[in-house]
Length: 92
Image 1 (spheres, rainbow, N blue to C red):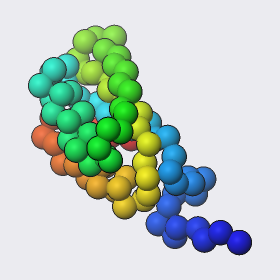
Image 2 (image 1 turned 90 degrees about the vertical axis):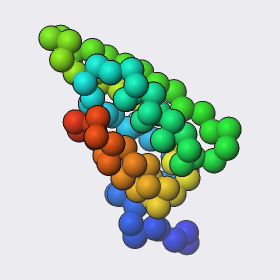
Image 3 (image 1 turned 180 degrees about the horizontal axis):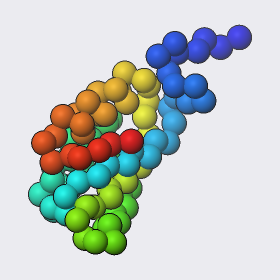
């Protein structure tokens, strides 16, 4: 029987593909800074795919970063780095 990580959210089996959804003001510097912060916390050469969507009023930018999370601790570090950025309004 395999061990289950007690910190892992129900349903996640690591490594897993994780979509991190982030809402920021439409600012290219913030989007670049966040993407670089996430990349720095992944294994060297790990791929991140990015999608963007501007809100209908143009006030917010929805940024989705898809990457492979190796374990719950890494995912926690990524989420803390993203939510700690002053340009982030909300991260899911």
